[in-house]
Length: 433
Image (cartoon, rainbow, N blue to C red; front, top):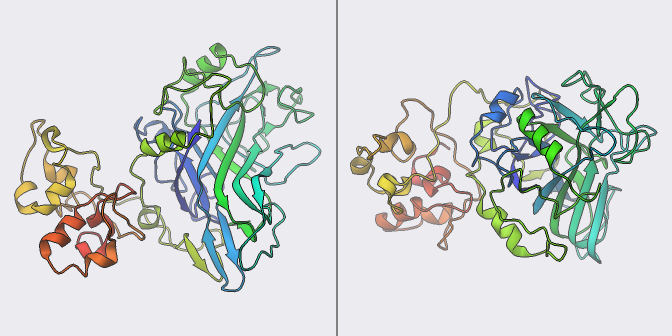
């Protein structure tokens, strides 16, 4: 199962359920705002097409400390771009049955690194290694390689044994355990006799430049968090009925007769090319409109940070969930007409926003930002680094356009992040600064 990030924000819905967490995390999976008190019921209610992953039925949420490149001369942290992540579920029913994650299950893994009883086996594999060509290749982090890599592949394993009772535990780890020898097919300890699928979680950074990179908690330890968003009965049927030929993380073991892929059909032959760039293009094509964590959860800057990364449990600003933010439907087409989207409503809002489509839906309700309809929601804050899908301009250059028609047309253009210009750019007069 493959994913792209849904966003980056300083929350942790497992550890800090009432306030901001200690450090910034990168989230994947269900396209939902990861407030500290997010619930299983909210995950399972997410629409099938609102997922940054490619499996319809998997509405789970995964996250890990965000990765940054550090420049010690300018004292600047720049967030690394995650190219793609993957979650491999590994199980076997040969000796004993594997139990599906129960509804509401959650866990954390890898915080202690490898010990006598814990085997996350976190690894950063440098594929296509070359010399670091940064001005300063010094580093104080011993997890991320100093060398440059065509692709940096970072991976770790979650435990595969459960106590059979608790959905969570006080430290969020004690209710699960690794097998006694750390191998997938190893024996579960007597304290945790129930087998669950082993999740092997990967994320990748393409064109990794080497030098000093670090996790947002300042450590060299890769840990990850998981909240199940599966329906327990459905996942159990997959575990019971689908068989793969290996206990390794298999890129061609899809179980596609049992689960539904947004980017199907999948190639399961031995000669499949899983380095094909078209696979990443297909994943990008199915991405939903990402929600703005910065405008809806916390205003903290997480992209480029000067001096110190935001840190400290229960410090900083956490926006309230009480007021729903306005959100224009990027997929809306008035009466099915491709050009009659929310950008169309914005261009002539006094005329178009009064219309009602054939289904009885008011345009102003589907496009509240374009139509200045703040009856049931609040106008969101503007966002940074907006770029149009087509056209050579940005938010700053919109204000420099002399002709009003050009400005309106630019503001009505959809962006690469599936936000219209007027949703992102202060210059368009719709979002709040």
